[in-house]
Length: 327
Image (cartoon, rainbow, N blue to C red):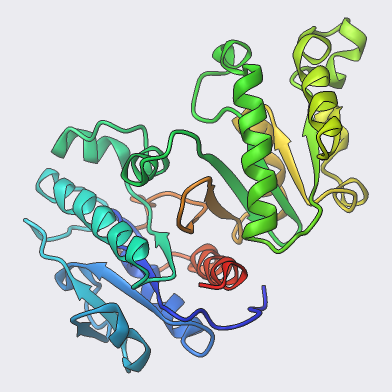
């Protein structure tokens, strides 16, 4: 993705799980992007891999002048062992996220890109009470409704329900929840992606979008009436569409983003189209947040083989969104 302009303030990068691959991929990502954008890492410098050149900074404003990876130091309780999370480091990860949010909220940083965390490690080590990054960021921001967008140059897709068992999806997929996902997506496409009249495709829940009720009634009972109501208020919506026919290239050309009904319905197409370059974006926050679309990679941590492609894409997308907002 090419940047319309360089954001005024640098991007804050929270360290995530120091035993994972995040601390391995940040330096090559900074090296690849240093001519395009400014960023700084909030982390304990001791957790960077041996040999990584870094420069400690005292504040975000120094990031642009740094000749090596700029690091805003945040001391953790313990060292980092690749592939083996330490409970004593859990609170440090939580505090780094909160510190990064404060910097973005104050305008000292233009956006936040988060390196992957490990939810169980946070829960075991610090009693972390949130399902993941997204919910914690929403709590820090004081907002009730946020949605997850997965994005690459060929597709933007939002799941209306996320990390719940498939059997629970029909009950969780309320009219209010689906409407919020559509409205938040619509607003973000205008504010963060520069689209004046967004086109959104909405999937059905059931095979063949219910096939007139023969394969399920949610489309007739709730999804189609909701879409009609939103169309009457000015939304450009297609659907409910059969999910198996809405993600090929010709179909994608007819919309700017898709809203899917559940996790795999959204993530399978984007991971098939661009497995390495997908980006996780949280919509509905008062600040910009992106993340690489992968986890901590404990199984390959410390081996020097982690791929920074998704992080590079996440940083580029954060910068583009910040530029769209005029940050």
